[in-house]
Image 1 (cartoon, one colour):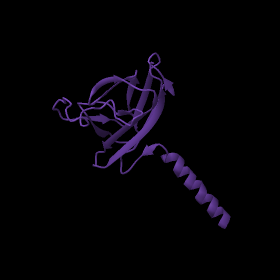
Image 2: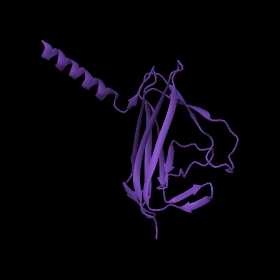
Image 3: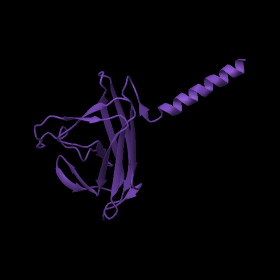
Image 4: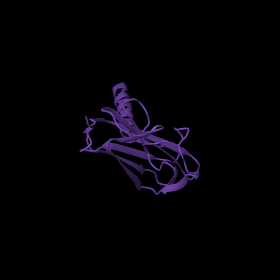
Amino acid sequence: MRLLILLTSAMFSSFGWSCTSGTVAPGNVALRMEMRVSSATGDPTHPVTVHTRVTNAGRKPVTYMMECVNPTLTRLTDPEARHVNTLCGTCPNALCPACAPMPRTIPPGESIDEDFQFTGGLRDCAGNFQGASGEYHADAKLTATGPNGSTATVEKSVKFTWTAEN
């Protein structure tokens, strides 16, 4: 009898783990994020595309705010740990348009997709430059709100190796 209880408990624990893997679902907000790179390595003649998909895995629509200045989910970090594709809010002298984030809705079962292509060109507070060789990190994050006000945040990160021109 004791063995049956332990096996049943282990079975339900395993089932619960596999059902929630990759999904954040507090309250009635259920989001799933997938993120992948087109290649683990890239160079100026072989750009790397980072694909991000966020799916509303719940039964009700969710709303998120899309920034008007940097309308991207993807934030790229170079080998020196600098964020190199989002300047507004990072650089003190960046010319950033004054605008409010726009609410966007993801219906139940629907997804939003984003492709971010890296060709080696970077920018930081000092201007544009060619990226150095090394490991780059692409991070994505989305926070959504359900109809009852509950929120959920999903985040993913991928990396790739870049070889710069000599």
